[in-house]
Length: 269
Image 1: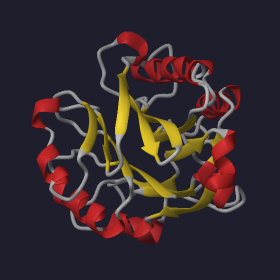
Image 2: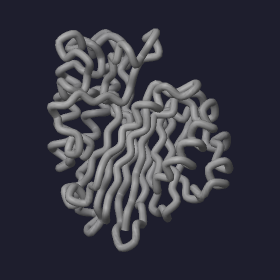
Image 3: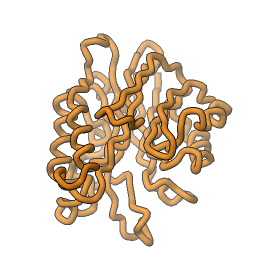
């Protein structure tokens, strides 16, 4: 069967509820993972998404900050919420996606941005980000406790690991999201966990690819100073099932957009 999984940092789900509805109605991914929802669970606009067929939902939010949510047209089970770094942030939720005979543990992450100064000693936000990445290194794509279950990891990981994931590798080496300590940390999460970078399996690593453009740019499209902060990874058994990946660059130009755009992976499972 065909299965599509999308990830999108929405930067306030209540502010951009209609954008999400329009996206779901036009693209109809089977599953959508949202990050930075910025609202507690009881304020999440669940009904608007159920109306258009996304009946299965796993929400982990908090007032005004952070927050993740997974919306699905196919059954979900075994929801897990975890407080990474033990600071009370809602940055992770996982579910089992029931896709025919295939069961997929889907991890939805919103990694801390890390502030402006890439120095652990003077910037607690950067220290938190590095600690969060360190904790993620224990997450294995083929968990021994879930034999026979494939895995997908998605989200705004707030790191652009490759030189071609940023508009200028040289100019961003000391800018948070592309510093060596971050890129090496995320690369170790990927390799130690046995994950496959599905987006870069579809789009060659030599090609520039961005999923985020700052609000600060007067003309984001003309300047094109983007970064690839949004990722879709999979367990090795799912890699051959990947049919294509869509990065909806044009979504950055929608009315009152998020600064991130949706990324969709399509599988034949």
